[in-house]
Image 1: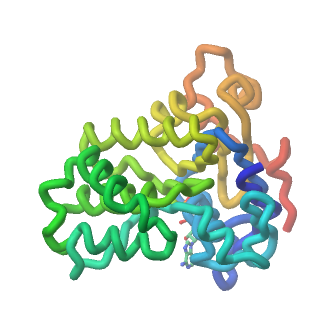
Image 2 (image 1 turned 135 degrees about the horizontal axis):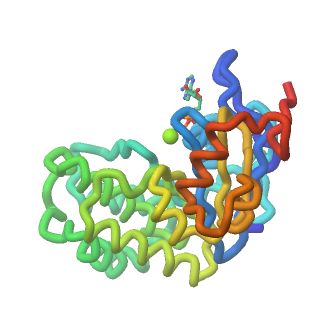
Length: 253
Ligand SMILES: Nc1ncnc2c1ncn2[C@@H]1O[C@H](COP(=O)(O)OP(=O)(O)O)[C@@H](O)[C@H]1O
Ligand SMILES: [Mg+2]
């Protein structure tokens, strides 16, 4: 498994945000991380990227432990956060160069950043200050940063919010290309129709616990729904009914 999240638990002071969640993503697999607001999606991604520290549990990337091999793990990761926080006083190209410095991407920098800026239609803004970009453009910049190095594991937290249709198409294409190149991809999203089309497997969270996992067939079965049910149908059923007495979401506290 390229990404192996084992029994991850995260408390913020006394708030239990993630409760014994295990998720693995294989090479060449796209997994969708779904769940209502507050279900723990962002917290899981922040634990994987080391932005916040897990309370307990283990995170492995290519078999390397985040706890023991933090630098090696981080080099293999790319993360697009829900709310990008770029360096506003750099130009677009300076920002990309700064972000790329951490990853030894010097040899590919020129061709890679040119191509990505063109794909996301930011090329004519490359010498402008990040400060002057619109919100959607900043989101695109964060996406470009994620693709500047050849990450093994890509994490996207609500990546499609705020970017224009052409940007959405490019990002989807790039995610599919990354899968073909053997990357493991975890996408947190509320866009269920996109998740249904793009993801090989879905993990559904509710109140910090994993309540269902699988492809659409598995989820339909789990929700006791027929094969006509969409991902939206099964999602709403699984996250609204009380499933505490079934399956992997058994209370552990
Ligand atoms: N920095 C924080 N401090 C305290 N509680 C937090 C913090 N971040 C998230 N939480 C809480 O953790 C839970 C999970 O939040 P989050 O991971 O952001 O969920 P999601 O991304 O699925 O909407 C929520 O109850 C949220 O209020
Ligand atoms: Mg979130």
